Length: 193
Length: 161
Image (cartoon, each protein chain N blue to C red):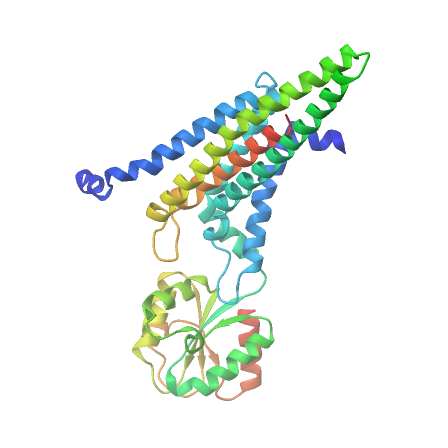
C-alpha cells in the first residue's frame, strides 16, 4: 500500500517542493530583517495571521458548507421524465419567478459531457429535489432520486398524473396537482422556497 | 488613523486576512452562481494573493529606488554647497544607506516570492486537484493560502522599512 503510494510520486516532483521550502525559508529570513522580532506584538500578529489562515484553509470544506447554508436563495433540482417536460417547464418558471434557482438537465447538459458526474454535482449543490411524477418513471429519474437520497437531500414528489408512486419515494409526503392545482403549486412553493 | 494603519495589528493581521476574505468574496460574487453554491474552491485565492504581493513589491521597490536617486541628488547638492551642513548631510547619508540596504535585500525577497509562486502553482497543478472540478483541501487550498498571506505580510514588512 505504502509502496504503491510512493510509486505515484516522481523524483522530479521534489523540485517544486524544494522551491517552496527555499522560498518560505527565504521569505522568513527577509521578515526577520524587516521586522523587529523583539517587538512581541509584530511577531504575535504574524503568527496569528498564519494560524488563522491555516485553520481557514484546512476547514475550508466545512466553512464553505456552512456559508452556503446562510444563502437565502434556494436551489432546486428538477427531476422529470421526458413525457412530463411541458409541466416541468411550467413548474420551473413558477419556481424561478419566486426567486429560486432551478437546475434542469436539458438546459445544462452539453454533448460529450459525463451525465452522471454533472447530475451528481447538481444534486449535491441543490437544497431540494422536486420529482415530477407522471404516468411513467424512467431509470434516469430513479438514478437522480437515489443520488438525492444518498446525499441526504429533501425530496418532494409532485404528482401530475395518476401513475403509481415509485417505490423508492413511496414513503414520502407528496404534493398532489391532479385536482387543486393552484393550491398544490402554492404548497410546493412554500415547501421549496 | 495613521497610527492605526501603521500598527502591527493592522499591518500583519487585519490587512492580510481581510485581503484574503475580500478576494474570496469577489471570486464568489463574480462567478455564475445560477447552479452552484459557495464551494471550498472559492477559498483558493492563495495564488492570486501571492501574485499580487509579488507585483506590488516590485512597484514599491522601484518607488524606493526613485527615492534613493532623489536622496543622493539632495546629498550631492548639499556637499557642493558652501558651507556644508555636516549634521544634515550625515542624516541624509544615513537615509540613503538605509534605502540602499533595503533595495539590496528587495532583490532576494522578489526572487523568493517568485520562486514560491512557481513552486506552489506546479504543486497545485500536479497534486491540488481531487477531481476535474474539486480541489484538495491541503495542497489545493491551504498551502497556497498560507503562502499568499506570508507573501503579503513580507511585502508589508518590507514596505514599512
